[in-house]
Length: 203
Image (cartoon, rainbow, N blue to C red):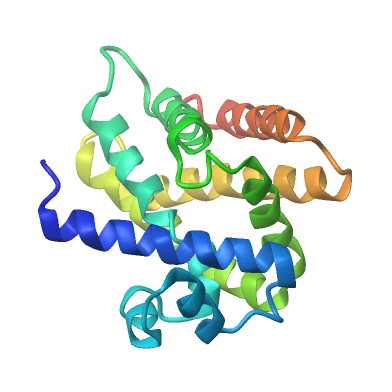
């Protein structure tokens, strides 16, 4: 569906605010940056900031909705004879590829590293990350169950998505602790996803 002019303007403002926020997070630190400073850097009113984000923590995850949209695209383009477990793995691979090649932070690699650091080290961002992840996990599981009701029920879908997300979280945490490069992180995530899928091959 073609993006409306209003939706495009809203998305552009959202990205403008997020980019200003990430610049300030990199320069001053997350906890030292205020919403007023972010709004000023983006040249918008503080009210405009809150029209787009409920809190400063939400800015860090401004692209989370894109992951769900990618999931819906992958489900709609399911290949002939592709199993549910293979579709799950391809969904993960497509999300990673889209994020790295066309994601809102793809033109600023250092911001991807900053994003990971914030998620791993700032308590309020960690709490928000858990909420975002659980919401995304619930939506993706529901999408699988609703799209393929004859192949996977809601409980199985929730368990399968939970297994995949849990494996990816564990790999991400270890990658951060070991100081992996971005390429090493991606490889570790792929290994974790493949391992999780081995137990789901019956789907």
